[in-house]
Length: 306
Length: 306
Image (cartoon, rainbow over all chains, first blue to last red; front, side):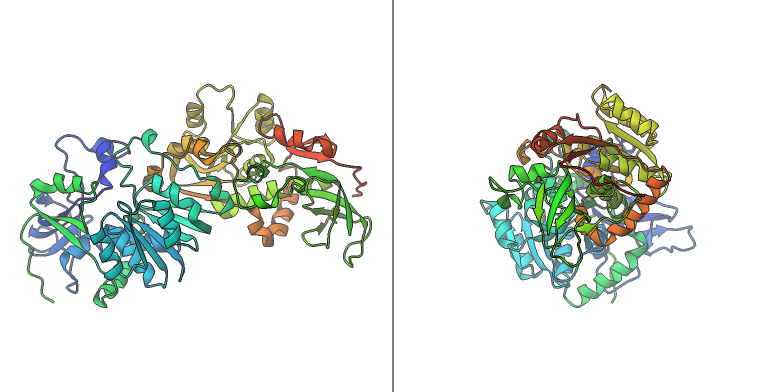
């Protein structure tokens, strides 16, 4: 089957693969297609389960056209939310938030959550899902616009603009004055290290992303120094790759679609046009200028009937 | 009730309290008794449950005499193992090994375990309990005597003398050539950081002790840099304070007594005499010269009938 992608994504996690610091590195050579989630329409098919005109989500990467035997493709038949949701709030970022809270943090009602890089799709979704469980949620983001959206639209209890706040440690201590049960971190080592002294006994640290560290060699990463608190405060730190939860994706998506329909789960998209602009969109992920799920429109989006 | 202690213990974990780096610090002033596990005999009692001559384990600290209302004291009636076991392999160190493997690592049969400071009671017990589950166990220790005991008496599969091995990273890679499921660490940050690249997907790091870091301020601790592996390798790192498991202590002790009686669980004690020598015994914990559970004999040990 031949698929013409109309939306592609750029993701910070690709940075370590491009740097060659992990085991996928050997796959990427000059001329390789950089991987990434896509949504497209089937243009030609010899596959019994996919017909011309079907809309599919997949992982064709930074490319307008893809050839597939159907493996890893999902037909998008749901018409309640726009197609783009399936690559954002219902895609890897939203599912990372969902399973980061459910499986890794094992979040309980009314706990205290601190989310970093909070205006990204992972962070904003994590914060809103926690709010739905009665949690006290603080978000750290890098602009007043982002902070305002988190507070006024997403319902975060406290927001901190790390670029203007001055003393970030003090701001975290004030926003989470009773201590933190769960740190949902998308930033990296330095952020985790500074938050550890504010964690409650039994606190959990979700290592969801490390956007500040992807560009650094391990020896240049400042490092986590406050490890004695792991004993005294019984802390747990764990990373996740959301694909491990694929058996539960439908349940999670169904729950999140329900929240979106009720107006309880908001998301933002930041759309760039054209495959040639994907590198620029990718680089912008690390400067903080993106606001919302960074997508690249690769072609016409098919009409979507309710 | 008045208790005359005949065995006292010195523990590396006291170091952070003495340094004032954790929240217990305010309790310790000049003239305070340094805390620690003890075993003693009741000399006088107005307590209905304790009679003169009863042997009790408690936490009177670095002192020959203690007055108590009975809280926190446990009458030692078991005659199958020497009294001193209750402050070592069946006390906090042994229980830390037991629950570190069971609750924190959630060890499975036939996994690969790396234990640091392996000739200490925590490390040696952890390694032997893992061997009883068919695991491949490697221990790191600081002398040939210790390594020989771990291999020939405790049955460790591989041992590494970190003081003489030269390239420790290479030695770990060779001893655990298939990767490591569980790192049971009693040493600290630098050790954890160097082992992370050898961890398997789904690996667990038990933060059991930090003997190399207790003497350092957080900013002087080298830090954990390899945190990106927490995502790519789905690692989990968690600390424990074994008192959280007190409800399960009897079950754990009963199981470990069974292993001791069958000759499947070995332990060593390194006994110093006299309360005045406790500071020296304590300091020796950090130089590596202790070999086995470091105890201080404070008085005559009552005869123990089988």
